[in-house]
Image (cartoon, rainbow, N blue to C red; front, side, top):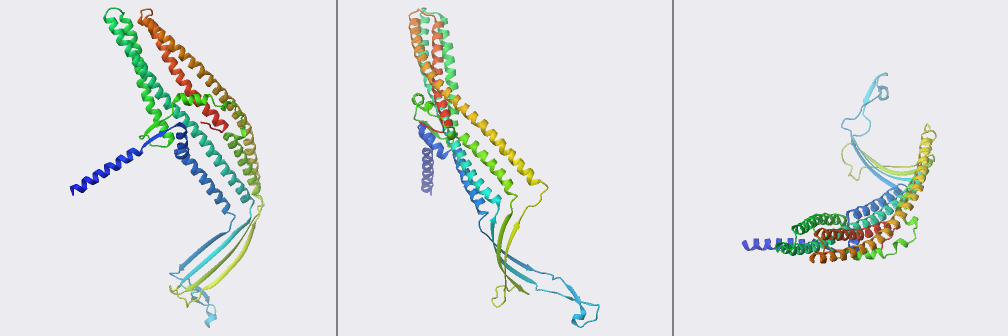
Length: 448
């Protein structure tokens, strides 16, 4: 028994270990985007919206197709109604009545009805609207995909930014600690002032505080990326790309030189489809004035019994069938239809005005995004040069400080300038990545 329990425990631990191993992910930026497009919460819901739209289209289409309904009814008159007939019918005295019961206690009826809509203007408009709704949902899904790509790109870049910042800060701390130790020894030998030690201590404390804050930021950034990917936040995630490589790739892309075709923009497509929806609503109100024609045919069989013996094949069932058609023509609705039509027309005109505004807004958004991306590239190149200059200045001041030719204050200024240039350069790399993603989203293209 103990042996079986021990084996069960070992098996349970092994399963847990296998599950733990399965909860590990490693993505490049391209892999992360593809994973999110397939598995993120937003993508899964968008796919379901498209499926719902297709079902709704068929639901509308089915209204105009043949409909068959069956009905089974059973009645048992526990207390049959009594009717009075003149008694003279049975030879009784005139002016008197005899109570009688008509019919039987139990009755069963089986009926099947086939109905068909022949003409309905509202139905024809509904078919158009259902197709437009499917297009609208597909366009929304495409727009969601672009937002997923943009969101994952930004989140991936944010994680890389924090990780690279941590590495830079750790190198700075190592250099500062080495400088502090050397300066401390020089001070103890009476060859340096105490202020030199204190200046380095201030700088070191500040950098350590930045490191602690950046490490906390990294944890939040990774969890945000996991949420965007649609994976549990307690799983292990490793990023295989680095910030500089992605930024350089984006900075050399031809995205900013692509011709802008506003018809490819998803916001523009959605605005157009919204106008089309309003047009169909206007058309629907006008179609409500048209007649509606439908037809039906049914077949039924009924049995009458004094007792429950409907399954007895010797007993009779009585057949019946009806063929019919109807035409419904709206004549007067106290001007309700007229008001509804005018209201729909106004809504259609409003949608057209909004579409014109949206067109201008999208064009302006493209111009802004293109300008931002071009500036981000130029700024990255400038800050790259600034970083190289700041590194040389800090190195020169470090040499001067070691030789006693520069004060600790001058060294601290050079160090602070270097650390600021490092962070600005990293932020500029992320800005290129983000602005490129924004521009590509507007263009409805994405190049890794």
